Image 1 (cartoon, helix red, strand yellow):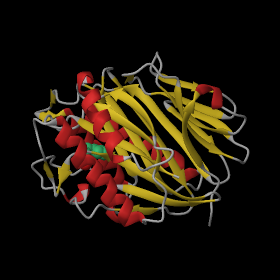
Image 2: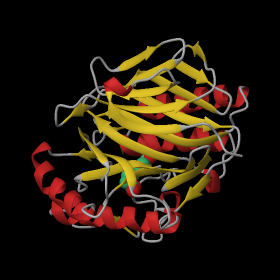
Image 3: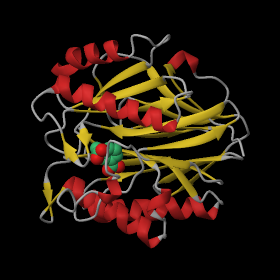
Length: 315
Ligand code: 3EB
């Protein structure tokens, strides 16, 4: 069943009358909710001054609701939800946040998670003898297990270390299932060996939704990982090429008839790496007209050696 959902990365002047979720990189981090929009400010820093807004719009009427730290924007086909709060005691916070989000989605009949974004500070610091990313993975897995979400139905996801001490999670849920996609070049994250995290990361490499405008592919954060191992630890150019090879493999798996990605967000650990990564992107997408719109963001990728991660959308 085709749903009404559109995704754009566009100048803020493109914000139209359609209801939906907007992601804007501006201070302060947090939520700005109106009667028919949910604006999430994830507390990330753009690396190039831009006025892009990530727009997720639906055509039907929407209703806003707030349940403590959870904001919900419900339309006929799509539910947008966010959770914001402190990122101290990350394992417990993450578990509670996911439980609250998933219960709010279920209560409204939106039982299928299609895309989730997660941001919190100090991703490599230690907490309870674990790296905070691992604590996050344990909390998330505990909630997904408690709500009996099978590994074969995981959402696409992003998890990035921000420069703020806040946990910000936002998601898209639907009434009918999306199709999770895995990458033939990569071990599924939920089957990573335990050395990366005592509880493996619970996400799919992408999800495919059938919308009224055609297929929509939501790409998870993708990095220089082949099999389950990080590649090219000290070489940002080689990491960028490997990441694009991963995105290409995912594109081929999703269907070659699909268009090039319409937008991408590049998270960089080191702002000074941007020219090198931009050169690799320009080469890779030189045949695409128009090429993807790209937003550059400062962020820490979950493994110390990874220097960049790319997410985006094929529409
Ligand atoms: C990777 O492929 C890189 O824990 O939700 C990418 C996207 C990554 C999502 C997550 C982690 C997550 O393992 C890291």
